[in-house]
Length: 519
Figure (tube, rainbow, N blue to C red):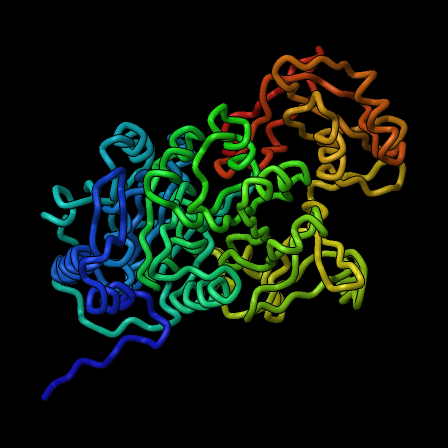
């Protein structure tokens, strides 16, 4: 009897196979009201896997996508996992030239473009000298007929260290880089996450994070499909719709960035919204302000704060809900199977005990490197440690708080200033709805802060009042040289401040947005 060898122990392709056996009629995905069972998900993914192999697609080749969150995209993900292919999800928020650059780096064998983003995809491919073959996702697209690549690919087992995802990082400047996550990386990331934020078969997970970001996969969604839960997929974020979905779909858990929870709390329907099913929620991307934490805790929703980055899979630090209000601003302690160190960025030596320095991360969830970029990989992976570029402060109890990015900290009169610290001080003023701070050249101090402020609707304040407020809570060298009032703060696709797009204007209220950066 010729029995095929099993795939690696930590490959994700069999997750849907196992769930289709144990709970075939359970809903795996609720995609805008259209349900897909585990039996249907497995059948479609398995059929697409065979189609890939028959059309000549083999392990190591890449499939790039340009699509919103959808069940079709999930089917494609698991087909890639089963076939040993690498999924490269690209952002539909990019300009054509940016998208073309990422396609050039990814060098995909196939570019799968959803009709909604067809014009953007076509514009990007027109900029490439040799554009890849393209097709649409879903039953009427690649699942009906794939562009043939060659002869049928040789069948081989999928290995733990095969690349599964190549995700372009959300950095706000510099050459694009795609972080490669293997099957083992994703397995261990989800295992460690499950040991802190449990997701079981009876959970209903609301996924609003875009699937071109690692958070759209490795924060709750993949874990849900591993354990047999239901994932409610949303293509975007609308506060009113999310509040309705929580009540209608009986959502038990979700993940978002602080801006999501702020928008939900500010919605007119928040006070009367039925949140009784929402047992816990995960927040990441930035520290959550204490007033917002109290607002959600008052509604009975336990918030689990955390810190991560794409290169770490992304989960690194987690702060349990019971610690949230006692340790405001803290990112917590490492997830299981994650080791961290705090290092002096100047000396490159570990700081023991309480102290401040660059965060280093080690563990099976840390990425395999940047796609076809050994030089960039060597800069951040050193002796098994991932150098994150984030400055953290560890207290006497071992809890860590993220201070800022090394590259964002500016030096004023010889003193290091963290923009995020100044931003939090600005946000503590009742008239401030949003704020951002960047370092700018200063003839006297070398660098000084320039602040950009969005006022709350109906509120009134001015530069003098805000400056006095900052002087009351910050050292004087941290107080920005200028404060400009703007209509909004430019942000990345994950609502992080796009500092590279902020420049002081000649007049108050002027905020220069540089095209093509930090989208």
